[in-house]
Image (cartoon, rainbow over all chains, first blue to last red; front, side, top):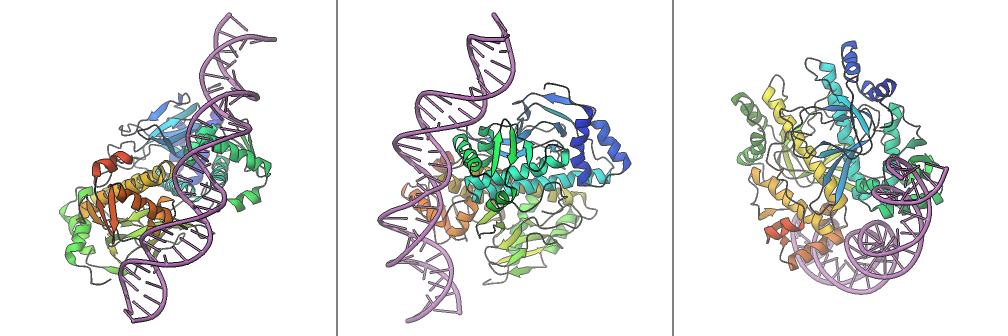
Amino acid sequence: MTSPAATSTEVFALNRLFQLAQLGEEDTKLLLVAAKDVRELRAREEIFGEGEPIKQAFILLEGWACRVRILRDGRRQILHFLLPGDLIGMCFQNDPTALTSVMALTDVAMCPAPQPCESESLAQLYQSSRAQEEEFLLRQITRVGRLSAQERIIDWLLEIADRLAPVGIGSTDKFPLPVTQETIADALGLTSVHVNRMLQSMWRDGLLRVRNGMVTILDRAACRQLSDYSRSASSRRITGV
Amino acid sequence: MTSPAATSTEVFALNRLFQLAQLGEEDTKLLLVAAKDVRELRAREEIFGEGEPIKQAFILLEGWACRVRILRDGRRQILHFLLPGDLIGMCFQNDPTALTSVMALTDVAMCPAPQPCESESLAQLYQSSRAQEEEFLLRQITRVGRLSAQERIIDWLLEIADRLAPVGIGSTDKFPLPVTQETIADALGLTSVHVNRMLQSMWRDGLLRVRNGMVTILDRAACRQLSDYSRSASSRRITGV
DNA sequence: CGCGTTCTTGACTGCTTTCAAAGATGGTGG
DNA sequence: CCACCATCTTTGAAAGCAGTCAAGAACGCG
């Protein structure tokens, strides 16, 4: 990490949580205090190992991480991207175990997630965050199962844009993408070679541009048309299963 | 449905839940009583519509259902199969909404899921069931994202076998599969034509046989070897995220 | 027995992968 | 400030897995 996480950045990350549920002043302060206790990790470091006990849940304050599974022969499937403001390892059971590995994709900063001891509203917040994550898993299944390579990439980029906005990162039409094409490929069930070709083809078609870790959506309407992206499940509070 | 759901069948379905958590006598009775209130639906009927409010959660007692999303152009992705003993629409938030449609794949019988009012152990049971469902979603992403057609089918069949066993349906090597090849295709991100070819190829190779709605695993060791099926996440209680 | 659904098969197409190698990029140390 | 190295991106050619289209066979239900 080039510079220690700035306080303002941390607060931006918490904004996602504040938008997810109505918190009392007590709980708000609890989160703000927790965010002072920053833990930093380098890219590629493992946050949880699959099958290992989870001692502590975290809030991601800065950087990107992912939930991932590795197959015996080395194939890798990224299941879910964790962005600033996301909860890592939050669980509502005793002696929780990590169902998947969680690894840092970039240098990251995170803080412990406060226990929802007596606080009803904090528990609701965590449930809401969990429901939102389930929505992303469902979208991910549909994306990988039924969309073409181009559709997958567009659909995924639009989702990422909508997730970054509430934490103050980029705009809907231009935002950072600090991951390699291989990482994108492992998330979308493609090869990095094909991701590369598709990105170029979409640039030629005037749809979007990915360059130097930045995404520019050139034709938002066409992008939405070409993917099935419609559900605005990003910052909206999700209640349901 | 050819015959009304037999009481004994209902109890078999509940066995999954009994194995998932240690319940007090009170809660056990609550479930057994609830299971008397049987609702029946025909194949293809919708249990929940995507986006609609969930008034009531159910326990599936008999038959198969699935969580599914339909794309604008008609493509269909089955996200998760619901088997006897599974909870449908169980949620821990107020005013829950169905994130996905749920439809009956066969004729089904279900009953209302008792509210976990003051009961701590029933709430734990539901959380555990939910965690298990999340494990299946994660497996589904990996399956569809990174496995070949043959691997997907084998991995999926082995998972189904392990899920049916605890509710007393079939054995690990022979069990009913009351869905069309098109349904399998829509779950695994394939076409029905290709599912058909793969099933025949696997039969020729002496791996397994699917015929008349029954699956016979002919070479279990080879099947496990050829898929990445290893995690025994079926009846085991899952604690974690 | 007849009809609709599901399964099966063949030929052909094409999206995506594979393999390999060259180019770009960025960080590090001399 | 530049050389160097590791990582990442880009490109081409060829192969393969899975999809598409179409039609006939089998099955199950009424």
